[in-house]
Amino acid sequence: MKNDLLERYIYAVAKRLPKKQREEVSRELQELLNDLVEARCGEMTPTEKDIKVVLTEFGTVSEVVAKYRDDSGRLIGEPYYTTYLYVMKIVLIVSLSIAVAAVAIISLIDGFSGELSILELFGRIIAWPIEAVVGSFATVTIVFAVLDYFKVNITKEVDAIEMLPKVPKQATKKFGISKGETITELVLTLVFVVGFMTAPLWLSQALSTSGSSFMEAHATRAIVWIEQSMMFVMMLIVLDLIQNIFAIKEKLYNKTYLIVSIVTTAIGTVIAVIWGMSVEMFIKINGVFVSEGVQLIFITLLIIGALGQLAHVVYRYMHDNKVGVYNLNKPTNNNK
Amino acid sequence: MNHNEIVAGLTQEFRRGTLILVVLGQMREPTYGYILVKKLAECEIQIEANTLYPLMRRLEGQGLLESRWETEEAKPRKYYLLSEDGKIVYEKLKASWEKYASNVDNLLKGEI
Image (cartoon, rainbow over all chains, first blue to last red; front, side, top):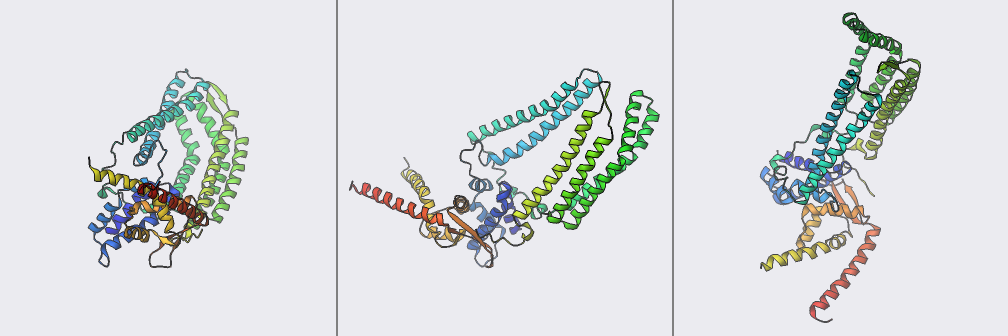
């Protein structure tokens, strides 16, 4: 319990610091707090009360975070900054979701009533989310700047020792490839494959029961597109599976996994380009079938997605190897 | 007027100003955090334990200190030491302090 309290305190401080400082600061605090506990208790085994006294004398989490963060010249300093980031994340996610939902719902209604031009639609897709993000960002920033200016006390509850957050299991296992992530990806791939392969069947089913000419035109074209695309999709899925098998086997963002990722992404990009160029996709907008623009967007999205995933692997490879995480059990000897 | 409170506040101000000089002065030999806190406390120079490591990190960031983790001992410890630049800065800062302290001393004694 007493070690738990120390760990929770250190974790509470570390998680409010920039990521690159966390590991080092955690070790420093562990060293210093253990020394302070030892100085208080000597040979005696420290009790929970001893730990609480040491932590109280050492300072609240917000005070320690403020010492590690150099807040001079900042609009919002500690203890407000951590809460500011937390609130900002929530507000941005909520406002962005509302904006996207609003674009989708209102445009669908306008689209069906024929009051929406493509230009207007693109304008909404770009402008509404930007407006939501900028507005939320400005509002949250102003509110916290005012709180900081008047030094409104918002930390009393947060800083109580009893309120220290529990150390999540992932905190001690933050490197390497997450097994859960790989399994989730495999399950999603499987669901997609099943859905994609059976799509012509259930689309035909829907077609035979709907009797609508609008549905018929779209479903027929979708079936043709899916059947022509099947071979390309299967090739991309095989590449994805190869990458996931290596992820499970290697468990780390190491050189082998990096090379496999680069090779599969390169092959995948070529397949995506050939797919986009050879299979025509028809979509009806405002009564006219369009294909070229949609084809281009489709290929671009596929390539952006693949490159984004590769960028993530490259980043993790560089990050994990830079901080020497594969020998994390022991503190590193960083003689400078 | 609470004289003691005012004096304590003003004393705190010049202590804060000289803290970096004091810390740099203790870093001529490899030293770790808790030993430094104890050593300064023995000389009646109070420094909060939670202030020391952030301060040393900042000095390291400025290139005045170097650090390394010693893992040979029972507990891993982070030792700090003056860097080559730190030695030069420390000597200059020390000379500047000595001159300033002597001037203040002379002023207070009414010799100027």
